[in-house]
Image (cartoon, rainbow, N blue to C red; front, side):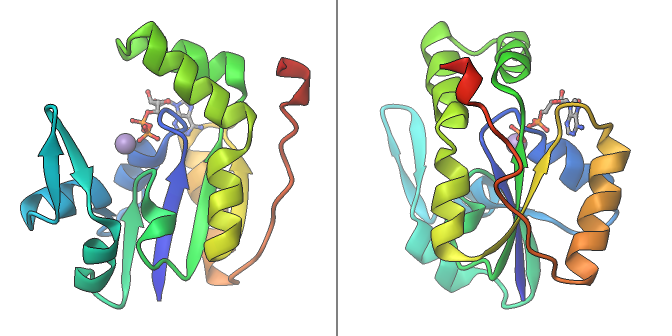
Length: 157
Ligand code: ADP
Ligand code: MN
């Protein structure tokens, strides 16, 4: 089974993956290493179909494209838009990129894409520690639990 950790940039995918104590493949790093994609205007565009074909059948993957590369089960990390905005600003993203990602989070964009593609388990990380999120992921995956519609960001519009 391919288990994905997806979510809008800044929701904590990489931090959580690094805390899981198991191998988690970064979709972007995997694609770059195997040259599955192309560089357009200095930005590496991942070829999701090629990544899907090249990934091992059983693995954990993380990245905002994890739900597009053949994951059977996906953890979808969420963060309240105002907190996400702070995290992305701290990361040094341009205002344009901050807005783009905050808008995507408000609209449940990744959640709805993932919902179309695989069984999902959604977690609101806003008021949780990294350790709490990791514990919830372990429990969810062990029982292949499904959960969604836990976040309501409509008050941010
Ligand atoms: P992503 O890989 O989704 O873009 P990162 O893991 O790179 O996100 O960054 C998320 C940031 O949010 C980190 O600075 C991390 O310390 C912080 N953070 C705060 N709370 C949490 C949480 N509960 N789970 C994951 N990350 C969190
Ligand atoms: Mn990341």
